[in-house]
Amino acid sequence: MSKRTTIIFSVLVSYIVLQFLWWEVLLVRQSNEIIAGKQHLAALSSSDDALIMRDIEALENKKTLRLYMTVGEGTVFLLILLFGINQVRKSIRKENELATQQNNFILSVSHELKTPIASSKLQLQTLLKHELNREKQIQLLNNALKETDRLHKLVDNVLLVTQVENKNNSSHLTSVNLSELIEHTVERYFEMYLENKWIKLTIEPNIFIKGDKDLLPSLIINLVENAIKYSYETLQVNLTLKTDISTGSTTNDNVLFEVADNGCGIPDSEKQKIFEKFYRSGNEETRKTKGTGIGLFIVKQICNAHHATINVTDNKPSGSVFQISVNKSSS
Image (cartoon, rainbow, N blue to C red; front, side):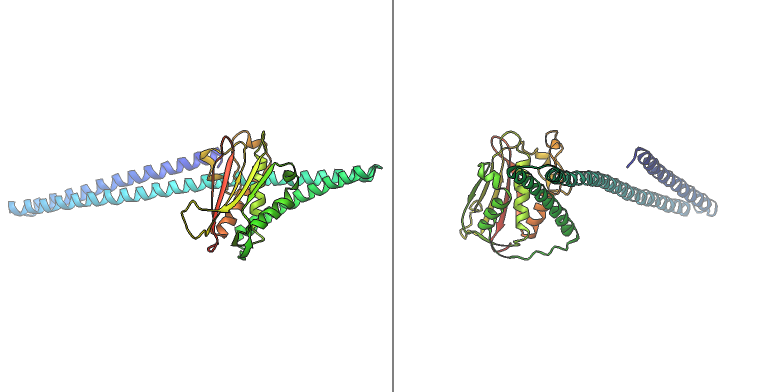
């Protein structure tokens, strides 16, 4: 909301409240005048002192009752009005925040789309304009492929958000070997990080859940990419999949999947906000990283589709741990 709109809104609200208070004062005055007039007429129309006093007392009681009714109704109306105004202000503020986040998202997506396209174009133009040896050609082609993969993942995320928002993405839950799915996904998308031992897998074999094999890879990719993105000094991401025994269950029906990093960490005040659409952590360090603010939103939605819970805690000595707990039979 612009400053001018805020001023106009505040003036209108103030006018309504003041007008209402003045209206209530006028009603009380009018009621008092009517009762006083009736008391005067009663005094003039009867010669029986006892009858006069009885009528005056009855009118006085009616006056008091009307006063309470007028003030009570007015107060209730005023409270409802103030509550409505407060809700409208909250709604406007929330809409403004969402609009700002959407604008930031559009700018981020535009930048994220242009960068791989421009990079791929440069690689291909270099191949066309220059006579290069085979090794250099392969290097440029690999770079172009990496940028294409990056573009592909971004488009997939944007489309997935649209599907989730429109509820057009109906999850198809089947028996999935989560252990193999995690290993294959990481090997396919993060091969270089595995080779350099920047990613460590501790996967309990043959853990099966009821899941959507098309959605689960997006959850894994977004969590791992998030961990890599915010690891500035020490890049070490640990993925763990195991039977969750913390619940004390003897049936081993709960599964725990963890993604831990040694990055900058997440402030306590933002640990729940990071799962909101378009939200990006506001500290100065994370603002230096690229992103659209939809990765963790997608993760949260996929967790919801599998009846799984996700929590983020602090890693020691630094970093974050994302923990997903899911029941084998209820997912």
